[in-house]
Image 1 (tube, rainbow, N blue to C red):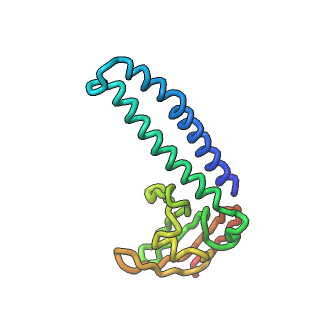
Image 2: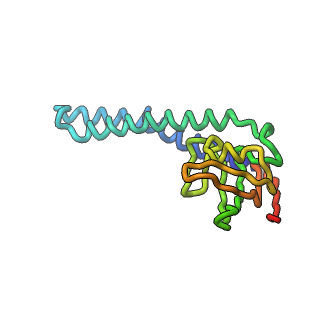
Image 3: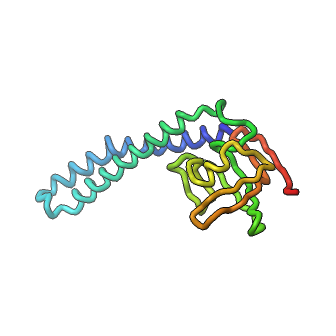
Length: 165
C-alpha cells in the first residue's frame, strides 16, 4: 500500500517539474513578448501572463508543501492493525443503520464528498488507533453519533473485518 504514497509523490513531482519549467522558461518568454507590445497599462497579454505567473508560483509553493508532508510520513511507523494515515475504514452508523467508507489522507488532500478525511477531523481523532470491531461515540456538530468499525484496510494492505453482534 505504500505504493499509493509513492504514486502520490510521483504525481506531485511531475506537476511540480512541469510548473517550474513553465515558471522559469515559458512565462518569462511570454512576458518579454507581451512587454514588447508597448504600454503595459492596457496590455492584456502582459497582465494575463503576470497573473498566470502568480498562480504558477503559488501552486509551486502548495505542491512543495504537499511533497514535504508526504516525505515526512514514515510508512514503517504507521500502525499495521489500527486506523492511521492511509487507512480505509468502513463505519456502520448504529442509529441510522447505514455504512459509509472513509480514507484518511493528508490535510491538503481532504475531500469529504469523495470520502477523504483528515485524522485531525473530529471523526479522524475519534477513530485513530481503533480497529475493526470497535465501537466509537463521536460528538459532531449535529450531536453524538455511535459507529461500529466494520472493516479496516491499513496503508500496508492489511485487512480486518468484524460483524456487529
